[in-house]
Length: 330
Ligand SMILES: [Zn+2]
Image 1 (tube, rainbow, N blue to C red):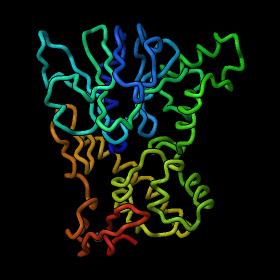
Image 2: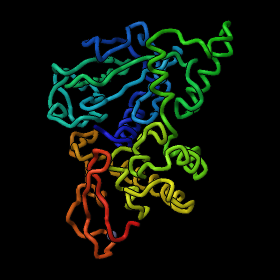
Image 3: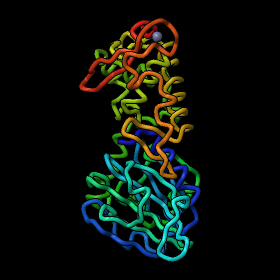
Image 4: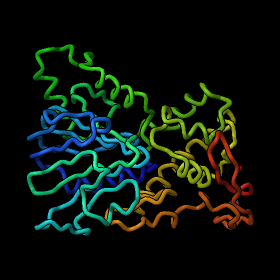
């Protein structure tokens, strides 16, 4: 399962290729995964690409947004047609589950949807296990915290709201599908890079779950969205906080350190093109420089990178494998 840095890397890569492009044609190859219809996208132009937790949000100029989730085995691969029936690996962009698909011609039997664009580019959504999805939602229904407020999408949403003759549109959820998508987005906690993540928010939230261990607190997507197992371990190591500490015992200064550490380790993950133990493959089919920047995750038995003389230990915490240094984390 890709973590937030991988998804952010995909978003940044696709943004360079897709913004401004118009969808000419669309192929739906799997009704379970593809929960949109041709009407949702044909002739629509892509206005922006953003991320909310691990949801990839593509805003269109027709008043709708597409929501992609890669889940376990999803891939989003953009490809530029370079003439004939051949394909050029160097003309691929995107990310997701790493397998030999990256080196092969597309579509294949795991291709669930294909988008054809006005510049000849093609976007494939592949998913072996079919847990991923593509959904759509009207932009008017987005609440301020439902998406990272990137300018263009918010402007379109506000314009649509102004033009709408039905003033109740904001509170009116048009279909069961819309409701499900909204529930997914609205149940998510704050984004790690947004200013809403601050000491006050964490202290207040910790009061609701005083006896929860800090690692489990960090993994709760309704509190902070997008931190997975790898970056929870890395952030706690960076902040020198033991993963089994109870949140009620975390001091104010430690919360601030932890916020800084969360942002630092996620930024590093993005800088390294995304990485995960499940072998993330970057935009060009190379295995990401994955573990090079990780300090404790899956480094059990190695000397602590802080040179404290400790050794990286592994325990199971809340069913998840957890890595830490028992000497310099307190
Ligand atoms: Zn140490």
